Amino acid sequence: MTHTGGFQDDDFWTEFYDFLFSDSRYTQAEELLDTSPLLSFPAGARVLDLCCGPGVFTVPLARRGFGVTGVDRSPAMLDRARKRAADAGVTARYVQADMREFSEPGAFDVVLNMFTSFGYFEDPADNACVLRTMHDCLAPGGTLLLDMAGKELLARRVTPPKVVQRGDDLLVQTDTVLDDWARLRSDWVLVRGDRVTRTSLVWFVYSAVELRRMAGEAGFQEVEVFGGFDGRPYDQDAERLVLRAVRAA
Image 1 (cartoon, rainbow, N blue to C red):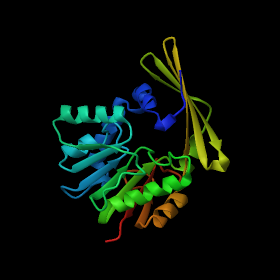
Image 2 (image 1 turned 180 degrees about the vertical axis):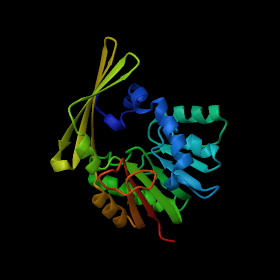
Image 3 (image 1 turned 135 degrees about the vertical axis):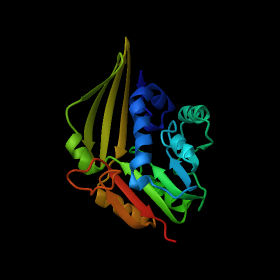
Image 4 (image 1 turned 45 degrees about the vertical axis):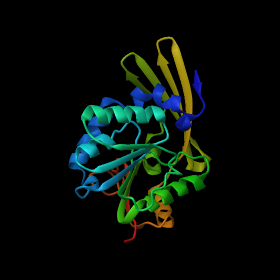
């Protein structure tokens, strides 16, 4: 079986769910919300979790008393997110929408975009459009927090194929740099018994300098870049590229 739609293909999220959203991913989200100074929001803040997936952050944010809206284009992931919210006994609002098109101007105090959920679109203008959408959804003085694997970090990690095992299932991932480091392609092969599923994912990758410039062009001010959720500098010891930016008051 081959999935050709990649990030845009709902079957992809279902087929590769166990590898994309392991139990440790949910545990990590809880720990980050408890410890990260970057994820410390005012009580009662209205939070937009853009590309919320199965509610990895949406549900624990709702549990902490925030008014949370999760947006994703995948019906399968939203179904899982709604179930997680119901199981946790919390209220979260979920909306199925393309991140380029979701529009609730000034409705949120915080916009989150986590776990490299930016750069999906083939046309770079669409990725710039997403940043403008994030900006417009924020109330004046509101904060964007965008987390990804930066180009500088990926340059250290593009190695021979990676092999990950979950139970009896095996995933082999091979990464290829495209267009002078403008984009990255990941070819995934998932083996489940006698069943083999293949998919290819292509997305734009950004350096800190590029992402900072794009945020400024989208209208953000006070743009900062960090190397992790603990607020460390974005330097040779960085673990993530975390951008924080503010919509002007």
